[in-house]
Structures are given as structure tokens and as C-alpha cells.
Length: 449
Figure 1 (cartoon, rainbow, N blue to C red):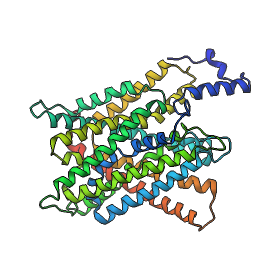
Figure 2 (tube, rainbow, N blue to C red):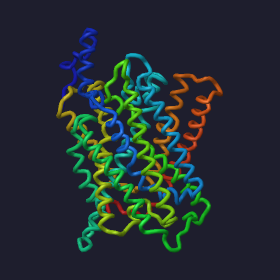
Figure 3 (cartoon, one colour):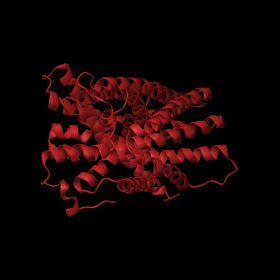
Figure 4 (cartoon, rainbow, N blue to C red):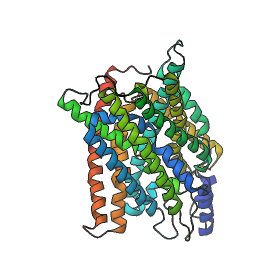
């Protein structure tokens, strides 16, 4: 897998500056984030669509049922506006220092907070979001595969969800060895098309079924505590739906840049296109799904929709295909972190075997966690509040205030502080609701069922 110690001491102090730079370039050319800078603006668009329009969109009608019409619409609209603003900030900050690119989120954090503190602040949160997304995609991919199987084969023996998660994971034991973002652009494009397709099916089929007899828009829980905690949990669902910021700098790193044509131009064009698609997918799915089914809607809107069977089966297989791409998009920055530590810190020699072992181990880990705690809704809420809220809603604003220092009480100053306050509240409240639901479900759950 690699060697350490004396044979690899050429990484040590005896290297000249030129040799160190050459060795650094060799490593950067091997690492997945910096190995290719041939991306186009549409790479940005499809990667962002794949990253954002995922597990979150299927849970939005359920989130609306726990928030209610007024707070639910406000949460959706505010999140769309705030996260678009913070995305713009990150795209602008990618090359704010002449001659340097912040190719990774933690590099931007280190510039703002210092070498060590920046790592401690950004890396744990980013890892929780990315690893959490991969676990949720494992769960949802497996459940959607089971739903497809049960829909098209009514006479077949019912199999455990665990088996379908294992089947879904088997694809990633192969795809995870594609080297970088550019190499998965085809997978990501397919996934983006699938995400728009099943989102459209979700709200289109809801319209076809019409408003259900006896539909109710009151809160599900009868107790005050239940209503409050479910409200908090739903906020986490919404936050998770806008979690694409955690890989935005890594995506921008794949786009070529010159002083005359910086990468922020094509990157922002791709982001705008992606956010238009996000609005087209999120708002109809959330509002129409809740309008038709009220508080009887399931955590996954496709589970609520039983007919027409062929359409629901097709939507679920679209979900599976999209989550294959979504998993890879969120896994790539994690692969980059793991391989950076192995090569730069532990001084393993870059090799195919090293990459094979590291990535296989990671896929196996996310698969194991997914089959152990396959709680779709509560996982979204917990990860959405605990880590998506900081890295998506307010950490870019804090970094912006530190670096650009806008004039106190100016529009920029107020905009950033409003985002920070709302984001902190979201970070505190949402995980409480998600954790409570995990605990409640765990009481009656049988492992590996």
C-alpha cells in the first residue's frame, strides 16, 4: 500500500525548495480535488444540482407537515435566498488572494481563522455533512431500491432493507475508484437529470391524485412537546436540502482560471442555473405534496404515492440512479481528505493500491452505519442542523466579515449578521428534534431488519 520512514525521507528537510515544490505538485496532481482543472460552467451546474436536489427534496412535504403553511413557506424561501447569498460569497472568496486558489473549504477557513483553528472549525463540520450525506444516500438508495422491487414484483418474497442497502453499496465499491470530479461528470450529469425527473414525478403524481378526502393540515403530534420537537426536526430537513456549500470550493477548483478569466465567472453561471433548477424541484414538491396529503404524508413522498405503480416504480429507480451520483459527489472531498492525510502527513507513497484500500474502507464504513441505523427522516434532521447549518448558513458570513470587514451597519454587515443569527438558531434547534426522533425510533427498531 505504501512505505514510510527512511526510504521516504526525500519528503524531509534535505530537499531543496525546487524539489519540495516539484514533489508538492506531484502530490497535488494525484489528489482528486487538484488533479484536473478542465471543468466547464455546466460541470458546476450538474455537480451542484446533483449535490443539492437529493434526499432532501423527498422529505420536504413531510417537513411542511411539521412546520405548517406559514413557517414552512418562510423556511423554504428564506433558505433559498440565504444559501444563494452564502454560495455567492464562497465563489467570490475562492480566488480573493492574487495568485492563490482556496481549493478546499478548510483552506479558506485556515486563511480566515489561522492554520490550526481553521482546521478545527471547518474539517469536523464538513466531514459530518459529507459523511452524513453519504450515509443518508445509502439508506435512501437502499429503501428506494426496495420500494422498486416491492412495486414491480408483488408476488416476490419480501426482502430485508439491509439487503437492498448492500446492493446499492456494491455499485460504489466500483465507482469510488474514479480518480476525480471531472471523471465523474458523466455520472453527475445522469444523476442531475434523474433528480429533476423524480422531483417532477413526485409533485406531478401528487396533482394527479388530488387533494385527499379528509385531508388535515394540523400538526401530527397532539402534545405541545411533540409539536415543538417535530418543528425543530423539520427545520433540520430544510437545512439538509441546501447542503451543497460543503463541496462548492472543491467543485470550483476543477475549473481553469487566469487573471483575465477567473473561475468565478463560469462557476457562478453554473450556480445560478443550478439554483433555478433547485427552485423548480423544491417548491412544487414541498407545497403540492403537503397540499394534497396534509399531515398524512410520509417522510419520503414517494412512499405516500402508491399509484400509478409503473410511474412510482420508475421514480424510485430514478432516485437510486441519482443517489449513486450524489454519493460520489459528496464522497470525493472525503477521499481527498483521507488521501491527503495518508500522503502528506503519514508519508505513504501515492499509489493505486493506497487509493483502492482507502476508498473501499470508506464505502464499507458508510454502508455499515446505514444498515445499522436506517432512519431516513431523523438522520436528515440531525445532520442538517448539526453541520449543514454552520457550513451553509453562517460560516461563509463569518469568514466574509473577518476578511472583507464591511462597514458597521452597512447593508453587507446587516445581511451577514442576520444570516449568522438565523443559522446559529438553526444549528441549536434542529439537531434536538432529529436526535429525539432517532431515540424514539430506536426503541422499537430491530437491528438489520
